[in-house]
Length: 618
Image (tube, rainbow, N blue to C red; front, side, top):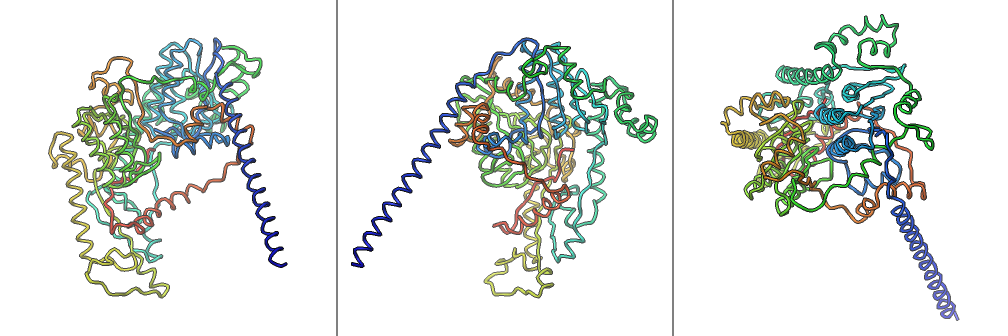
């Protein structure tokens, strides 16, 4: 009887499980069908309406401008679904939109809104400013407006035909420079010993870990670099605003007195100094654009098209011969890395893909990297060398930073083109070996054991650094530095001795590097594309193909349906999330700096040779 009841209960449990499982599958299928239906509706409705005459292109830049979006295509697509504003806007998209708008008879003007623009390096700002100037050269005006302008925002605004500022706003120019955190005393108190092995007088990357302030060599090199970059900035602003040379310096030097004379009104001071042309609130800007252009009755504003909508209307050509572009942005690591980092293996694979593509006739490597792993850098450089041997020209285009490892990967090219404001050079190598034996002593932990050779455990962070192991690493670092300078000498058609004279880990601006023979030409990203096309003897109208990792299925699907699908799904499923808070700048700096030590201590290798400048675009 008991067995019969157990069997009956088991059958009922099976039926209940089958019912639950079937219900789950039906529900998931219904959700999937609903998703497909929403995407289909979005696709049907995604065809943008034709632009009317007198349309203004609103260039409301969000976040920073970079060479490529960070993270995967899938993450970018999902962020769009959630309603998150993009944190990075690709430079190529900004240039594409401005150049297309210059030729579009429906686009009458550009309205440049910079409140949410978080800036970029000076080299990137100069690229965008040049695109603004090309738009103006087509006979169309650009009006910039901001509630306030910081230094980076103002560089773009200054190139507009007209600069407007909120009556309670300010133009804040402060100059270039940086203050670093130095951790010597803190690490000593924690019992952490940082053993630095380096080649290069100016290789100041590791100084924060072994000193309480910069060396005189580092201070001198930084001063020379920043003064050069600041001259490039002020000359660009003064030329664009038709101000006398030295106007920016004078205003900064006399800021306290001149602001007091203006009654503390920063907007009035900016207007009097001719840094802006007028003071307008946002609603006054809207009315001004209606009067100058056309009214959009539905929007109750001026007739306009957004940056994203106008970008979606641009359709790059497919098929035919092309210049292939590989982006190398971020710190360099050995293996596979996502967008925002340079993976030795993954970036090399992209170059190999371009080399094997019969339609790619030349390669442009767009570099925006402070360096990182010497081994990862060499993997990338080697693939470029093989590409040249295969008969395809290689041109390097340097962005904001192409220093140390970023310079290493640039050494196998037919031509190196840098912006005058690029930060480059930093030809030097070092290794850091943190040990924590004193930390363990403080808490009463002791380390001991037996090994078969002195090398076993030589890199153990729990033990003091063995002088023999330090000598071994010093020899290897010196060898890699010799490799660096020899390869650079071969690329620059000079001698290692002459390269060493301008190397030693010292950073230079693009203009300073050109004077010292470290780059071939000063020019823009567009100049690099033209140079590559000319070397490959491509006709006018050549195609530009970006060589990027293949997106996953979801990213391909969302990219195919475009922004309209994302908007539809966000509205259907209400996926918008509240942005999380971000840590303070100080916390970010300390976490980043000390994170290097943690990564080095956790590395699988006994040590890693590093070619990094610890430099960022100001």
